[in-house]
Length: 202
Image 1 (cartoon, one colour):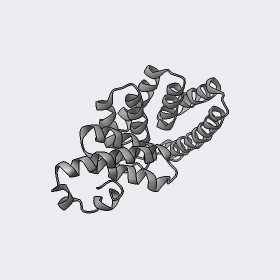
Image 2 (image 1 turned 180 degrees about the horizontal axis):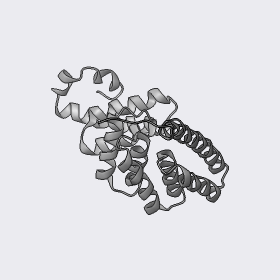
Image 3 (image 1 turned 30 degrees about the vertical axis):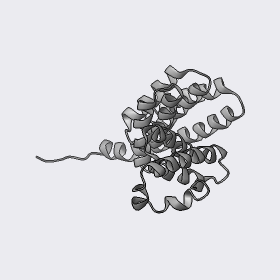
């Protein structure tokens, strides 16, 4: 079979990538503008800008994620869930959307669903103090105290002034102290916990 490349094919191969690239650049600029407008308190205007991005760049998933975040911030949880889920459906490894949807589930009291999304984001390497903190709270309830403590410490590395994590760390350390008193063998597996629990052990 002979492949024929005519001038129209060449023009297509040249200009289509350029058009796609221009659309992406424009979408990114408009997205940044929408974020700034939202941060200044103009929610509806920000939503309109993000919606308009999808008219010419329907695969710009950051816009879907940000639409989800903005709708969630004003209490439109069903709409927010729709946007997060669509972005994740198109790109299952979209770390930020996974974290945001997990956070929405968590706030709705759906901790099992939140746990799934948080763990996916964590395993993908997403570095976010709120992710570490929220996931540690779920792990504490599940009794995975050592892992919960590890995540709290990660949160504090990212922000050593994060007061919420200090509160949660104190609760986890208290739980670990009780667990150590009941199960001394844990010290053999995690001797580093002795340092963490120095002020609690009697």
